[in-house]
Image (tube, rainbow, N blue to C red):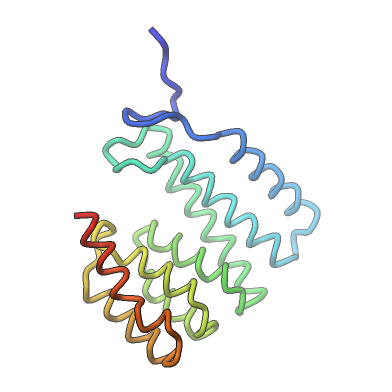
Length: 179
């Protein structure tokens, strides 16, 4: 009988651990060499977040292997710390705001507060609103009211943008498909 990897789940194969490990190792090397560069800190946050997801996998929580259940929260917490240090150095770093919003959501924090602060820094960043909507779907425990709130902010800040006018409609349809 073939033994399963401790990273595999009942429903899937193990993730590409080598790629994620190499990314984390390269990021650590960059951080060691340039610890005061905000982009290095963003890269560390991103690599830690991706490594956490690699450990966790994409399955529902009850199907996540033990190593994923233990490691995911730790890596997500550390990624949030690096995103915060990035933003302390460069408050306009849009990808750091997005990463912090995700880490905060995954740590059961007030991710909409992070969204609001991110909008203040980058009101026209469509990726920010798209990411917020992706975590505002029913599967993540959110509702239409949250999606409406995000849409209102997007339209207020970007009244002429075509993407803002279709934002909630697209994500409402996606959320319904998942049910």
